[in-house]
Image (cartoon, rainbow, N blue to C red; front, side):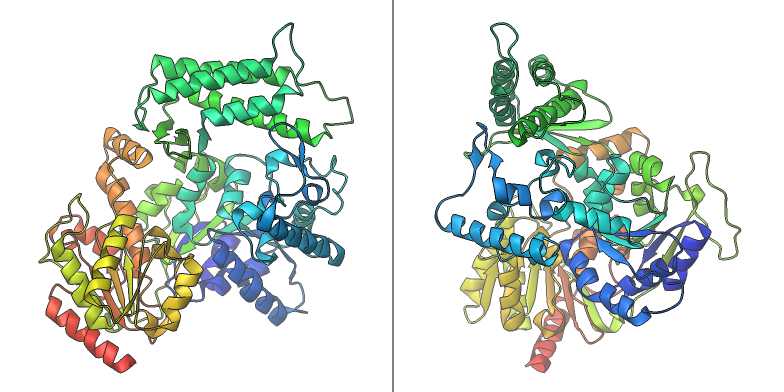
Length: 638
C-alpha cells in the first residue's frame, strides 16, 4: 500500500485503495506522505482516528525517522475553531441575545466552566494547544461557554488576545508544517466551499473515505427556523440604525413570524415545489435580512468591528440572509425539506445539495492529487460506486499496471487507479456469515416474534458476547427487552442506557454481556478478542423511504436513466453492512459469526451485490450449524 500511495503522489494520479482492518494503513500512507517533497494533508472522518494518528502513529513515525537527511518531520493538527478554547470569551464574555455580556452560568455548570477556564489559562501559560480533546471532562453545553464558532470570532487582527489565540496558533503551526492532519468537514469547507482554512498543499490523503460524501453533504447543508430569524432580529435591534420610524430589526422579526406561519401550514418531508406562501415568506426573510445588514453602521477604514456584540449580531443576520436566499432560489441542484418539530424544537427547514460529486470533481479532484482509503471502498466487489459518488469516471481509470500515465481530462481531473491491498485476516476460516433465510421478510412494524426468538437463541448459544446492530432505536430496545426476559443470567445493554464509552467499557470487561444499538455502533466500536463473537444485523439498512435527500437522489438517478435503487439505496445499504460486519474480526485471532436476520440477503436479486461488499466469510443459511459454532466458541472462550 505504501508503494501504491508513493506512486500516486509521484505520478500525480488519484488513488482509491481498499485496505482491510489490521493492514496498518495509517503507516502505509504516512510514510510516503512524509517522503513527498511538498505539503500533504491527511483528513479523517472521526475524532477517534485523528486522535490515534496524533497520539500514537505520527509521533512514533517521526521518532523513527528523526535525523534522516532530507526528511521534514514537522506536523500539525488543524480543527474547526469551535474545537479550541476562546480566550476572549473566557476573559471578557460573549454577548447574549440582548447584547449583555454573559460571564458565568449558575450552579454545578458554573463550577465546571470555572474548571475549563482555569485549564485554558494554564494551557495559554504553558504553550498548550487549548484543544477540546485535552480539556477536563465536560458536556457539549459546558464547552460552548468557553468556545466560539467562526461567526462569533473577532479574528486575530481585531481580538485583544489574538496573539495568544489557540486556533490562530494552530493555523500558524500548520503553515510551518509538512504534514497537516485535519478532518473531512474542514477539508470540505476549504476545498469545496472555497473558504481558506488549510494552508496551501499539494496532495491530500482521505482516510475513512467511505464517509466523505456524507461529510461534504453535511458541510453544505443549511437550516432555517423561525426562532433563528427572531433571535437574529433581537441581537441586531440595538446595533442597527433606524430608517425613519421603523427599525429594520423589527421588520426582520415580523418576517420571522411570517415564516413561522408558513411552516405551520407546510407538511413535514421533502418539498418538491415551493408553495406560494412559503416562497413569499422566504423572500420576505431574505429582503428583511438584507435591509437589516444595511442598517449596521459602516466600519471605519483600518478599524474593523471590534465590538463583539455587534459582530455577533451582524453574523447572525448574515447567516439568516444567506440561507433564506439559497432556499428562496429553489434551485434544481438543491433538495429542500421540513423536519418535524418537537415540544422543545421548532420545525426546521433544511436544504442540501442533490449531489456533491460535481463540486468535488471541479474543486478538489482537478486541483490536487487525492488518495482515498478505507476498509470499505469496493461495494458490490468494485470501486465503481464509490468512484462515481466522488466525481471520478470509469473512462478515466487506469487499469493496467503498465499503462502509460494519461494526461488530465479536459476539465483538469487526473486519471485514477483502484487497488485492493487485501487483509491480514483469513475471513473464510475466522468468520461465518449466517443469513436467516427461514425468517419472514422484515415489515414496517419492527421486529416480529420469529426475529425475537431467533435473536434469543443465537445470543444464548454465544453466551453473551453479542453486538446487535439495529435499524432503529425502537428495534434495539425491543430486542433488549426480549433478551432480558428470556436470558436473565446475561447482562443486556441498550444504547441510551448510558453514554457510549461507558457501555463499550462494560461490554469489553464482561464477556457475558450483550450490547444492542443503532448507527453509531455500526461504525464506531472497536472490540477485538472474545468480547464480541456474534454480530447481529436485524435487517438490510436501506435508507428510509421518506428520507428526503436519499429519495431525491434516487429519483434523480432514475430520471437520468440509471437505476436509482441500486445506485443510491443499495449502495447506502452495502456500505453500512460492510461497516457493521467489520465489527466482528479485528485481529488475526478473532473468531465469530455475522448473523443477518433479513432473508432478502439470500433471496433478492440485489443480495449478491450486498454480499460482494462484505468480507469473504464462509456462508450458511442453517441455524443449527451456526448455533453449534457459537456454542463451541463460547466454550473455548470460557
